Length: 197
Image 1 (cartoon, one colour):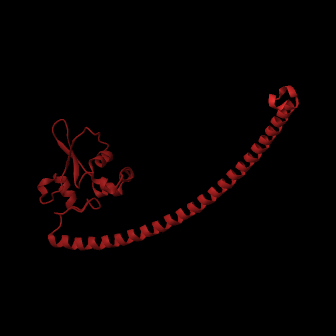
Image 2: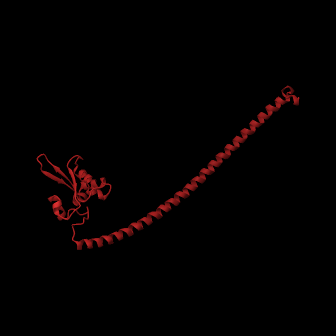
Image 3: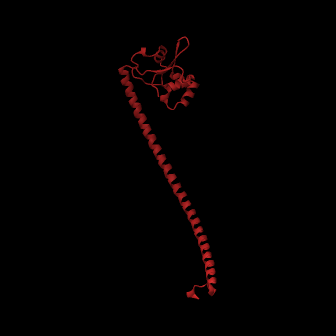
């Protein structure tokens, strides 16, 4: 993730510099911006070098990646970026310290705190709703799992009972046949052990 504001400085063959960067208008109000928003993994990525390269279709080896988070002086930025910041074209891309007076920053901070509390309340409410739905889904799963287990267990038991019945029948037939063979052989005195002749 890169910081607000990032840009890519590209020099042409004669040394003329062109700076590529993104404005809020480009990100939020253009078809290419929609493609960029779909491509980015989070809003934080909208100001990054990857987003700039995506938007302008710049290969990774082209230009020098630059960024600055120190807004104490306009001299730290290319003139076209300064002009776009002053024109308010960066709306939606960041809230850097150094662009507001201390009094305005305190007011902003108060508004931001209020917005955060609202967000926190809504996020908590959404979490509780999610948690309740998750528990309901888990309970349904658990009930279905138990029902499925009971069905499996009943079918397994039926199959086991059938197996046992068939095995016992086969065992009984085996015993009957071997008993008959044994005693038929025993009936012939010559087959008996000496003590039983």
